[in-house]
Image (cartoon, rainbow, N blue to C red):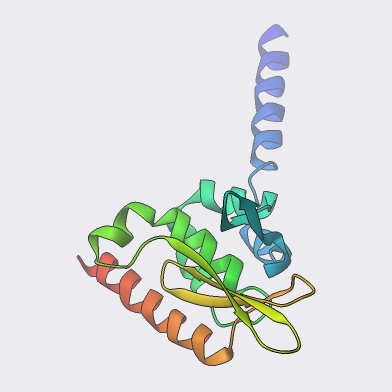
Length: 155
């Protein structure tokens, strides 16, 4: 009888631990460019505040193919680039990518726009702190990532 209880307990534990695996599609649905902000502490730099993004980073390289699909999405492309850059950080520099970030300010008579560079992607922040990137820039960035990942997969 004790063996049956032990086996049932072990079986129950295995089922509950299986249920805790993150659903990648659900995580991808919940990431958004709004989860990246520009921090200002002596210097300005982009920072991600996303539990879903952190989980995707922990999953690592196996999630790259699904992330690649979101790179040209105007509401997810920036955070997706941030996540991929973190996952592949060690390989990007070896591949000759310009790794790092930079923030500059563009002023005209009406407002100031912040230009952000992060590991090959240029994007912007408006006066309402909304991040955005042009569709052409997102498409170009996606093409760069596709080439990079294909090279890593074949090499």
